[in-house]
Length: 377
Image (cartoon, rainbow, N blue to C red; front, side, top):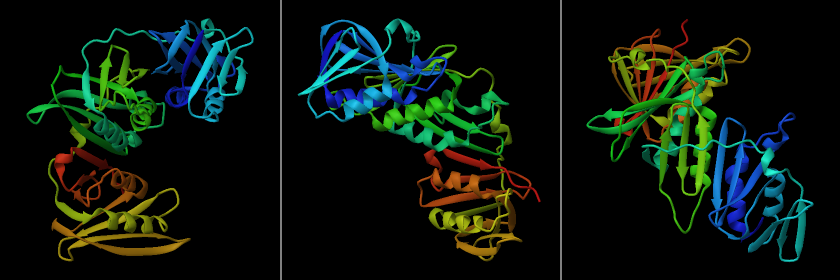
C-alpha cells in the first residue's frame, strides 16, 4: 500500500473514526483503525463491534492495499505533523509515515485480523436536515435509561410517519422517571417505520454531525437507512453502522395527560436559577424541590429544605392560570429538561402532586415535550 494525502484531511478522517475504538485485552485489534485503498481514495474504518464508523479521505493512491494500526497513536502522531502532504507506505516493519523531513514506522496488524465490517444493501431511506437531527439527539438522548434491566429503554425510539399534515420522525427516550420527545418534520415523506437505536450510537452520530467539515462537498443532510437489525447513517464522506435494539418501546403517549388544572408561563433562565438554588438545600438522595403555582400571586414559588443544610425559598414571576397547585420534582430531571430548550419562556402544566408534570417551550411548534414524574410525598 502506498498513498499520499493532506495532513488536514487525514487528521479529520482519523478524528471521525477513532472515537469508537476501544481498549480490549482479548481483542487488541479493536483499538486499531483500518486503512484501505478504495476507488483511488483512502478508507478509514474503526469498530467496537457494536458501532462501526468509516470515512473516505481524498488522496492519491500509488499502490493498493490495506493495514491496521493503533488509532490513537496514528492520530496523535499525525496531529503533530506540519500541514501539507503526508505519504504513507506499507513496509515489512509496519506503516511508514513521511512528512517533510520526518519519517516514522508505526507497527500494526494485518488487515485480515481486523473484524469484518457489515456490508449493508441500503434500501429506501430518509433524508434529515443535519442541524435538526443533531439538535433532536441532544434534546432526548439524556433521558434514556442507563440500566440494562430493560434494554429497550437504553435506546431512543425513532418513529417515522404522518404528523400534522406532513411527514416527520419522532425521537423519544425515557428512564421511567422522565420522558423527552422531539418531532422533526421531513421533506419528501416516506413509508412508516420505527426502530430503537442505542443511545451511545446516536450520540456518536451527533458528534460526527458537529465535527465533520467538507469544504468541497459540504453536506447539510444526513441519510438514514435501516434493515431489520441495523441502522446506517451517512453524512458527507462518513458512514456509521450500528445494531438496533430488539423489543418494543413502551406506548408512552398513554401516560401523557391531555388536560391540566394549572399552567404557568415562566422565564426559563430565571426558573433554572431558582431550581439550582433550591437544589443546594434539597434532601440528600431525594433531590427534591417543591414548586407551588399560584394564580393569585402570578408566579411560581420554588423551595426546598434539609435538616442538615437549611432551607430556601424564591419566587419566579410569570403568568399562572387555573388552580393553585403544588408538585415536588427531582431537580436534576427538571433542570435537564429546561437545559434542552432554547426558548426564553417555558410552560409548566400540572394536574396535581401525584400526576406527571409537562414542560414545554413557549412555542409548541418546536415539537418538543418533556415529562417529569413527581416525587410523591
